[in-house]
Image (cartoon, rainbow, N blue to C red; front, side):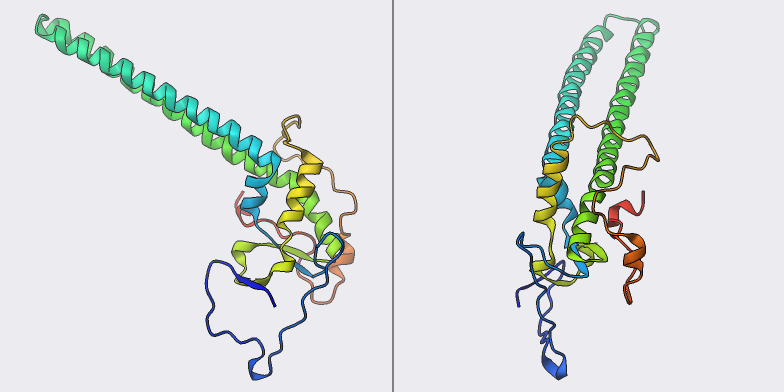
Amino acid sequence: MAVRAVRGVLTGLVLTAAGVVAPPLPAQDADGMAAAQILILDQERLFSDSKYGLRVQAELEKISNDLAERNQLISAELRAEEQELTERRSSLSPEEFRPLADAFDTKVVRLREEQDARIRELQRRRDQERRVFTQRVLPVLSNLAGEAGAVAILDERAVILSADRIDVTDQAIQRVDELLGDGGELAAPEPGEDLPPADNAPDPEAVDQLPGSPSPGVVVPLDARDQ
C-alpha cells in the first residue's frame, strides 16, 4: 500500500502485526478521486499552485517590491540630507543648527512611521486575501467531499499517515481554476458576508446521520479557525 508520512517519520510500523490488518485502499472514480469518509488536502499548495493564488502572490510581491524600492529612495534622501547638515554644522551657530537638526529628526520619524504603516497594510492585505480565498474555495471542497462520500477534509498538517489516494489537492486545484480562474474580476465579500453554497454540496442533515460521523461537511482549515 502506498503511504506517506506527513511531518514526521514512523519507523518499525507493521500494520499487519499482532493481528492488525491494514484496510483495503479506497476505490477511485474515473477522475482518480478516492471514495473515502476522510480526505486529505494540502492547503498551502491549493493556494500557491492555483491561478487565484498565483495572481494574489504576484500582486503582493509587486507591492512588496515597490515598498522596498521606496525605502531605498528614502534612505538615500535621508543620507544626503544628513551629510548636508554635517557639512553645514561648522558654519552655523548652535542656535541656528538646532532647529535644522530637530526638523531632520522629525522628518526621519515621520517617514519611518509612514513606511511602517504601509508594511502593516501589506500584511493586512495578505491576511485578507487568504481569508477570502478560503471562503471562496469551501464550496469546491464541499463538492469534492460530497462526491467521495466523505464527512471531512483534513489539512495534511494534521495527519501523521495517510494513503496517497485520499489526497484531493490536485483535484481541488483543477476545480478552483475552473470555477474562479485567477479571481481578479471577483468582488471581495463584505466582512461577515456568506458566499452562496455550491451546487451538489453534501446535505448536512444526511451527513449527520452517518454512523459515528464527526461534524458534517468540510473540516474548517486549521489556519481559518483562528480568524
